[in-house]
Every structure is written in structure tokens, then in C-alpha cells.
Length: 313
Image: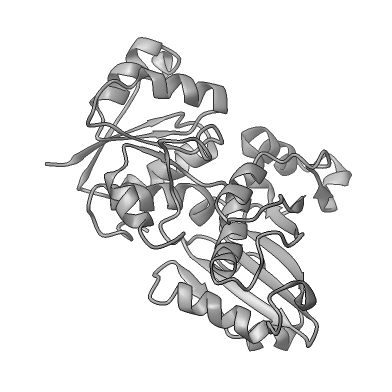
């Protein structure tokens, strides 16, 4: 029997992509809502409770409301909004986070899908904090460059219209230092202080790279860039969707430029360490609509249902 799946908020970029990923799967029955009833609470509640897995691709307030609509004990919610990423009772949807995370996702009925920037930052830092190489109190900064698809339908339309010449240049944002991904970046790394985080949107559709600079003198005494790379490689050994590249990745160094879009159209994240005798640069790239959104959500669904984790990905 096919697993019944409902996408609440299927008109947004994440919801549309989840539909695309699931479209060719014979093991999944996607429950459909009539267009004119998309905002009908009773119909949404009926479908949410009829599903084995329901994806919430909604703004935070609407996602919280949808979660309260679910009374069925069989329905697993996977929330792609920011609403539940640090809330007790919700498993964080990053299977590679730490030992035991996959087991938690298999058992959970409430899963919070990670944010795109947060996914890259956490993949880089959590193993290094756990290994004691990066002390929890280390003051950190991070910069994330991302394609405009992360801004949703209105930003996509704005960029694709091509009418505003100012959009040709990269645009830093989050200037209040209170970006919505910061709470999960702090909660799921073990850091004691939130990083100074600068997201930047640029004139390309998708792809994301988070960069974290490190002064080796601020880390555990004697720590080298090679040890940072080795700790990441050990943590992610055998992972299907997270790949740790060689120290000072030769392919990147050959051109001297970093390709932000190399993981596009995949559920893959790639981690890099570049270094000198005194400094290191950590970089993670991924597809902000793949491992940073819909791909991660489907990966969690597969895990929860006891299926091959990479099915459809």
C-alpha cells in the first residue's frame, strides 16, 4: 500500500519542489486539495489527518496553526518553516547531525526541517565543537551567499523581471543581526554565543555557500587546518549526502575561485577546509532548494517511513 502524503502550502518553491520529487514515486500517494479550498481550514485538517506524512510549506504562523489541526496519532508532520526548529518535542531534520539522530527521526511524529543557511553552518561546526577543536565559547562569524530562489515567489519574480539594475550586484541583508536561522544555528551546534551572520543574496537562481573564518589561535591549542578537515571527514565517513573534500581542495585551488552552484540539482552538501599556518576557512555548499529545503524534507520522510533514505533523491 502506498504511503499517503499531503503538502500543505504546495504553491511555494519548497512545496512545488517536493511535489516534483514525489511525482514519479509509485510508493507514495500524494493527496490533493482543490485549488479553491486551499485556505479552507476544515479541508486542510481533513487532509492533514488523512496523511501518513504531511509537509508544512507555510509561513511560521500558518505552520503553527496547521500543527494544532493534527489530531491523528499516525500523521508525521515535517515543517519547512522556522516555527519549530528549536522547540521541544520536535526532532531536528538533519540526519547527519550526530549519533542517534536517525533513530530520533524514525520515531518522531514532529520533525522540523532545517533552514538552508543553518544546514550548511551546522554541518561545518557541530563535529568540530563535539570534538573539542572549536571551544563552545569561540566568537565566530559566518557569511552565506545564496541564490534568489531562497526569497520565495515574490523575490524570484523581482529578479526574473530584470527591471531593477540594483539587483545585478550582491545584496547583504539581515543587517539587524537577528536573522531567523540564528536560533537553530546556535541550538544545534553547541556554541555558547551566536555568530555574527551575514547572508548575501545574488543574481543567480539557486545554490548556497556558507563560509566560516577561523583564527587557529582561538581554537584548542595546537589545532591545525588539517586536523579540522580530518575531524569533519571522520564524522561524515560513509554519509551518502555529505562529502568532505580534501584539505585545500586541489580542484578549487587550480582555478582560484569557489563554485557556489556545484551541488545544484542534488541533495548533496560538500564541506571544505582551506588553511594556512595561522588561519582556516570552512566552507559548505549545497543547493538551497535541495539539501537546504525540499531534498532534506524528503530525506526525513524516507527515514521516518523506514525507506531507503535516498529514495527519489
